[in-house]
Image (cartoon, rainbow over all chains, first blue to last red; front, top):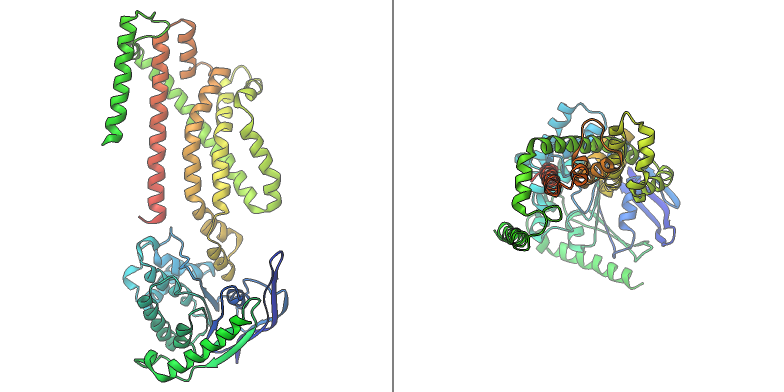
Length: 246
Length: 252
């Protein structure tokens, strides 16, 4: 079952020309899909199409999700500095009309799920980069989305923090089983997180390759050192190199 | 430390040289009174000058409130649509670039001879208007674009977007505009008092004119000193308020 799909979508911006496509993508129920491609290939554009934050110039976007069932995590944590972590996480619920008390309760649960129970009362300025990103993830999870879209969410973090967050993301996925689309330009991160890695060509991005990662999720210990991981990452890297050459 | 000591030393030196020059060169007091004479004039007229200062300060703060209400409303209106922004902005700019002294006589006529204080408040408000207007307008447009997208994603209503995103995002800009406007409102009040007078209750500008007419130059200086101290106090107060507001807003 597909949660969302792009069919021959093209996006062009006035004055800047074509940014994406024609591009096809099917996001299946409960899968983790990584979207990899060179900078400017339209990965983020594809994500915004899936989120209905943008409309395609040509082609069709179909979604099996209603309002509040799609969540987005951006590259920056994008928290409101004037709100506490808890109020930030409660925001999507409060915008949807959930009563404040109930919204705050569910926000604290979501914060606990990402390991931030202690920081509920902290302001974004008091959180480290990794903690802020966790809060952002909690805000995306608080509505129990069917489709979770992540736009290079860990790109601004150090290697250790991003590995830890990748594991946390997989643990959360195992609980809630949302479909996840994970945009990144880091091949190893894509292979570690996703069950399917889609490679896009240089902009305007088209499909340049697709690889299935043959490993259980959450990943077994030492997965990054395993032959399967190395071989898959190598295959994706080759696709990416070819995509960038064209 | 040098931020206190350096200006204190400089001001002290200037006052000493000034005092010595007045005494040694026997400069007539109506031309340049010695600092000691100014202090004596300040002490002798302390009650009167304080009352006038309070009057001018009250005028300036009333004008600030009036300016904030109109500037806030206009900035909100411009934030609603591009067309409204295009329509309103030239008027706001025209209001800012026209010298207040040029339009003062007009306001005196409109306010009528019985209510010169209304003209003064209106004129001071015009001077204070622009920083609040432009600050608020800029602030309302300064929300994080990704937060805007998030509000799109969750189907926020226009009212939710205004109260939960745009106004909070604009706060630092609004507070900064208010700080600049507070200083300008005092300038505006004094300029307007010069032109319009201030009716039965006379402000500091009126004291300066009156002392000038009587060639009481020391009293003029005392009134100017009072004005400078008052303006500095208002500036310091608003700077403190701005810092507090930003600490609250950022959470540290």
